[in-house]
Length: 277
Length: 277
Image 1 (cartoon, rainbow over the protein chains, first blue to last red):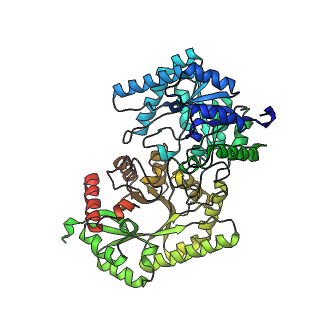
Image 2 (cartoon, rainbow over the protein chains, first blue to last red):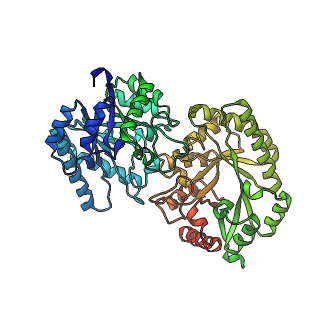
Image 3 (cartoon, each protein chain N blue to C red):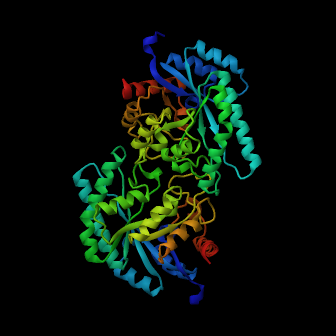
């Protein structure tokens, strides 16, 4: 395909086309105009990481990030240590495939106070930070929608993500992943994005849409344009900070996974172009 | 049943036992130790309101509130006027049954900016406020969980509810309904409850629980104790403001509606007693 057909800042997460193997993603993404790839760790299972790195380079795709680390909180010290070791492994994987960033879904434990979980998240990031810095891999705290506060993330707003960065002493390698699905409702969103720009913390930007009605808490996200999120306005806020990174399409959808994934990638490209070009 | 078996501050919403008619609620609630009732407007359809008021009194139940008004935002002025008229009707109904309070689920329009919807909510409340005051009926803005920001409520935090009260000039008749399901995740919750106490805005307190996993965005709430919400701690914050009103059990659950509603009321009473007695 000619270079002109690729969309310079369009990245797709491998989870978005979950039915495709990483090898199929490396064929289909460039063919459909995608320039960047965020690789989910599931997609790497059983693969030789240096081979994936080479194949991705040969496919002409930029590796934007590895998803996902995190899940630090646990009720026992042993389980928290296991989580830290898993994050150290993720850092090794990111380095091996040449991913400059790991997205952190921070974790939560049902019934454990959210304040305690956020403390454990802060401690967990502090524990893996030296390894990340040594590997040259950045970390991005992704605030998750409050509907995931029970068992997926005790970090539910950008303000809280900033507070964790502050508590860590604002290391340059720890920032925030802004996903419109999680934060679109937040009345503080613009000011917190501004702050992320000013502090150098805006590490990643994820897009998708919120459908009405949403029929599944996890796997009913919409393609951009299918829902109510002011994606373009939020994008403008992000760009206004000087952010020039990828716009990453991260969609979990039983409905869309059931469609032809090549055609789905074409729809992603078209809705991306309608938003930005 | 002897008076000693009733739980002084236990109120149940008619929607909680949706399979029961209002007449059945008036029999079952007192028999199962419930002292207060919040009546949903659906339960009043086709009923003589003064008869409902009399029967409720005769059943020994306090009417805590009428649920629900609100849904003010709309894209056309005509539709917003229709919403205002429906809220005026709710005020008439509340007066007719002797309900001292109407709970407002404020509304939202998918794709309309949340800031615009909040303005329309403020205007809508202002439009019906004189009628509410004349009728001696208070209004309670209920912040809804951010997962309902698309089409149910553009008011998703207590802070936003306070801001609307402020914008209205802090009339004594407009306050806030705190429902643990909607606000438990909010890092500002305690301070916003404190503020509601200081400003006389704490008009209602609703309880239920958040299940993990939650399998339906609307109708999978848990009975107190089935989930992760720190109900007792939030209750303590509410009580510390001087609140002595009812603790209202509001549960939407396909699972629990499918069970015997008398036994369900016994479970509600037992879980209430375990929390508070």
